[in-house]
Length: 286
Image (tube, rainbow, N blue to C red; front, side, top):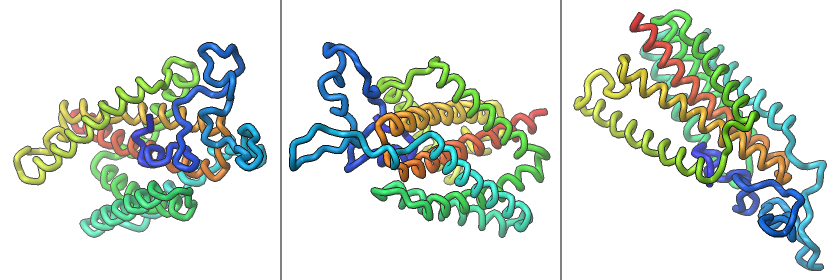
């Protein structure tokens, strides 16, 4: 079961279109009930097999395996690029119709770059950082717009995003959430239903059938939808965490850490945008 994250859903830390996510890491044990007892790399897409000599699968070279440090460093670089783009956009693009148009253009470019990377067989740091830069421009403009009407909303949204991501990581590491195939299937079904409903709502608003944003209005219903979206963002994070752990356990190539950073950045952007809307809704009702 793949993550709903566009990066992980396309590749899921794969090798030759294999998949490493949501499998149990190799462990010692009795043959009965343990699929790794006879062949510990039976489900490891990164295991290397010497076909010519019929040698058993071997784990990749330790020097080129992805580590948590690699993921942290690449994530810091990617998120840092988003932050720099946002700060520059905030400082250089005053709130206006022109800046709003530039924000939409930047978001479209970021989307295209994200899709190109998602369909590539190998991670491209240039595409990933390009996505981060344009996404940062988009976030900087809309954050400034929200701040001009609801002073301090972006800062509160940043704190809220940090709180949600931090709490999700703590809950995940504490083992209170077990990311299984069933958990992923149910969560992804809910996420897909949510996205379909939001797409229909967007069409209804565009054709004037639904007033004031429909389900995305700045009222109690809009707040409820925003909370659901943030909970889904936290769900995406648990899938991301699990797939990063699987990638490390199965010896994913070090370059795959760029995909991990890419996926985490996309999820955090999702949470931030929804948090920004939620802060604005609560501020409007004060």
